[in-house]
Image (tube, rainbow, N blue to C red; front, side):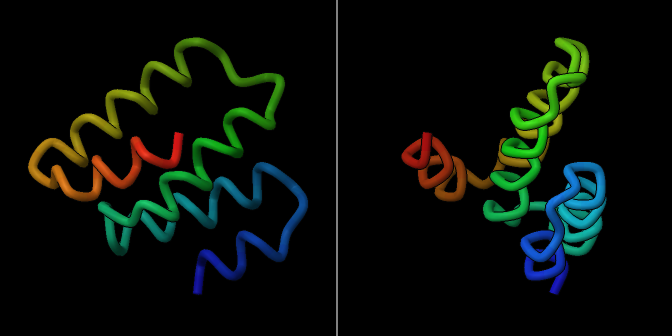
Amino acid sequence: NYLILADAYSDNSTKREAYLKALDYQKINVDSMEGLINTYKADSSTTSTDYFNLSKRIIDTYTYYPQAMVEFLNIY
């Protein structure tokens, strides 16, 4: 439901909150993580620290889920 909600909004901050809520419920959701990455890329105020923290979150989340990570890497 949060993914559908995020797609309905055009505001990046609202989308980001929806993706974060979706990840609260299922932390390995690749679609939510991809959406979160896209909101970071679309926001010009995103700092290198924000990207670093996001990358740490991705590594922590997908360390023990290699199949999801393989699919994720194939997207990019």
